Image (cartoon, rainbow, N blue to C red; front, side):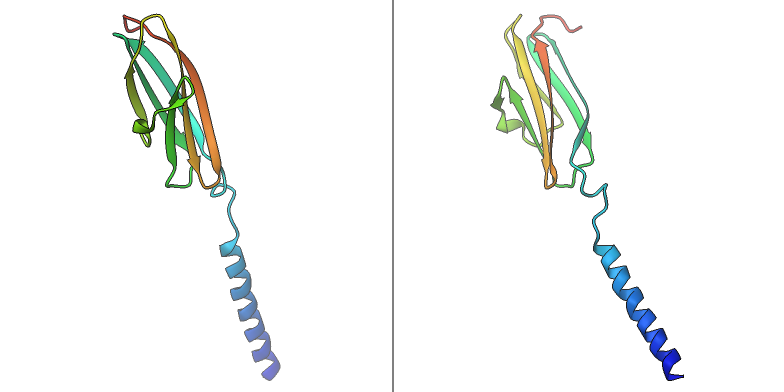
Length: 117
């Protein structure tokens, strides 16, 4: 009976040990970096509006917007933004999402228009 009890205890401790190791192992989805699922900008009335969404980020994630390479810190954390623009000028709009695993960014060129299209 001692051997049987020793085997049971050994098996029990092994199960606890292995279960703990598996519980601590990172999953692929949890260690993935953010992915920008869509971004769209449009222009009209001398205004540019942009919308974005993302997935795969480990929260809290940071959202940053850039216009012609310059950070617009007032827009931090926003999924939609709006700014005035000068007619017939092209603006380079970039959004960047960062979390503890990395970042994703997407850029679009937007022509400033008088009429919404």
